[in-house]
Length: 246
Image (cartoon, rainbow, N blue to C red; front, side, top):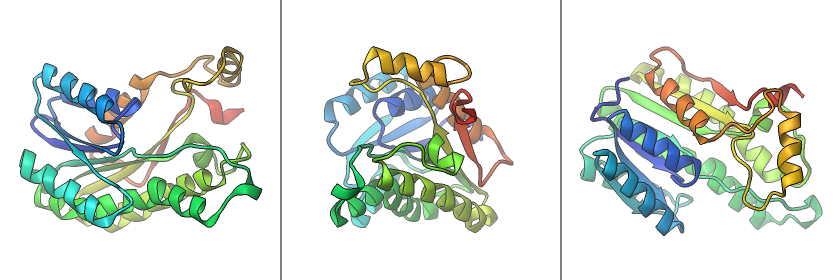
């Protein structure tokens, strides 16, 4: 798919999402960006896109709510005229010991990391069909893609991100007849969390065969590659510098 004048909706367009949005704008796309609480960050990203010379709208939404997901998609189409690509990046990532988990923790974790991707897809597909086909890119995690948990305390996150892989594969089959290609990206060590100490940062480097953190642009490149492909669907692409090999 050539992105010139196409419309891309990105959920969770902060941090890595901001780099992805700017890269797609440079490829000629117009952007719709959703946010929940990160108002200032999303405004900064929108300004970057305008400076590139592309159109952008920002929409506040609660992605765990079906009506909000539908409104997000509808406002994207009414504001930018069409929809060609949906990128489900919204996610939560927090640690909690198993014995402290509650039903609420379980439901809230799956709501953002799994349910939201389904709800946004459900709302987006009629518009992707109207555009003659499109792309859906979900976000999993390199640990989930490896098929086994590695870190204690991330039960709901691991389950949700594993389910995202299943969702991607099932959607790819369901939507192939509409020329809607559905894939997922499973990031590994892209950039250190703000609260990670230097020792831990260096330890991750040692555990990664390529010996470094990847950087946001590696995710942006993967997104562009999956959008441009006309024959890849149902795949989950690890972008982890070989981290899964150790």
